Structure formats: C-alpha cells, structure tokens
Image 1 (tube, helix red, strand yellow):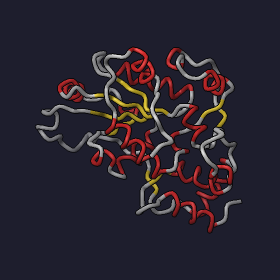
Image 2 (image 1 turned 60 degrees about the vertical axis):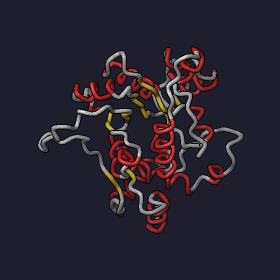
Image 3 (image 1 turned 90 degrees about the vertical axis):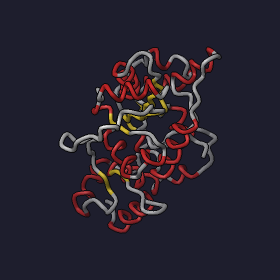
Image 4 (image 1 turned 90 degrees about the horizontal axis):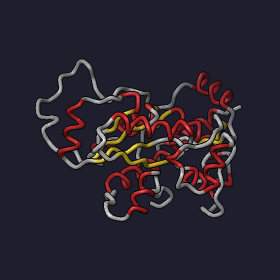
Length: 261
C-alpha cells in the first residue's frame, strides 16, 4: 500500500529542483528509492537493488491518486500538421539524441534539454527521420547519441539506430551499462536473459553475466535531475576519438561516465 503522503513526497523529490517534469515510470523509481536506504551509500561497493515497490501497488496508487503535477506522457518529437520552417535543415547539426524509451524522450524535451544542449531529441520509434536531418548531421560533422536501458533490448536499440543513419554518421551509445547501474545503485528488473552480442564484447565479464541472468536497469531508474545533468554533460562534452583504436572501441560500446557530475 502506498499512502497519499508518500505519493506526494515522491512527486516532490522527482520534480526537484525547480519543478522538473518527469514520467510516471520515474515516479515509480522515486518511490522505490524512498524505501531503499542502501541507495544512499557511496558508489563503492557497486550493486543494483531489487524493487521495493511492486508494479501492482504502483498501478493501484496511480489509479487512486492520479498522475501528480509534472508528469509527462509520450509525444512525437515532430508534428505532422505543423509546417517546418524552410531553413530548419539548412545548417550543420553537431549532435542528435535518440532515446530507446519514448517517455524519456518526451521528458527530456519537456525539460528543454534539446534547447540547453542544442541537441534535437527523438525516440527510437521516430526513426527513420527526415533525410534532411541526416544531411544536416553530415554537414555539421555531427554525432548521433543513443540513450538506452541496460538490457538486451537496449543493445538492440543501439543497433537499430546505427541502421537508421548513414554509415558515415557516427552513432555513439551513452548507456546505460550494467556498470553505470551498479555505480548508481539503481533498481533492477527481471527481463529476458540471453548472451549479449558483439556490442558488449568490451564490457567487463560481470556485466555480460549480469545481463545473461536476465537483469535489466532502465534509464527511468536514474533520478530525473541526475539524468538531465548527465545527458547534457555527455552530449556537450563528447569529443570524437579518431586516432587511438582502443579508445574508439570503448566509445563504441558506451564507455562513458554516468556517476560523476
């Protein structure tokens, strides 16, 4: 049973600071954090946590109390009815973000990450994009970033994004990786087990084993403020690695830092 007070408090924390927008899924994970004291310890040792709130209990509370102010729902990144400005694609585009989760894409746009980071935000379901965006990326020597869950489906999302853009356009996974989830003590879920493919070949062995056992961690499990701060830092601070093969390989499998910042 989730009390109305716990519901309101979780919504307040999810929206802090300054009234951030968040998804219902992020609210679910905020409720989990309120019941997981181990979440607050330091980054070492690294571990993920089992759910402290059942999906059924959350669904019942959502039906009873309704979505709190600030909750966003998926919305397309583009409108089929509004005309595009004629010069929208006339400039070089340095970066573009694709999110596996349409709700996370909507949340990032609702908090104006696309404006703050000068980075259009789309969901995987929005692909393929207007070919003119690909031209703008090429003109701007741009990079496509993929924000995905620590899961087999997340790895598949990266592969799908790579197929949706020209081969000459770099596609870089931001994570999550199991290592990020463990450092942040995220709530894990049970998913489909299986052997990770070639994209995970440079991960630590325990990360591949973690996925193979059917563990997953969602981007939505990252606190909203941290998610916004981290994604902004990663897409704005990314530098292409052109000369060192090992660094190129690490970048290609999502060897980017989440816990800092």
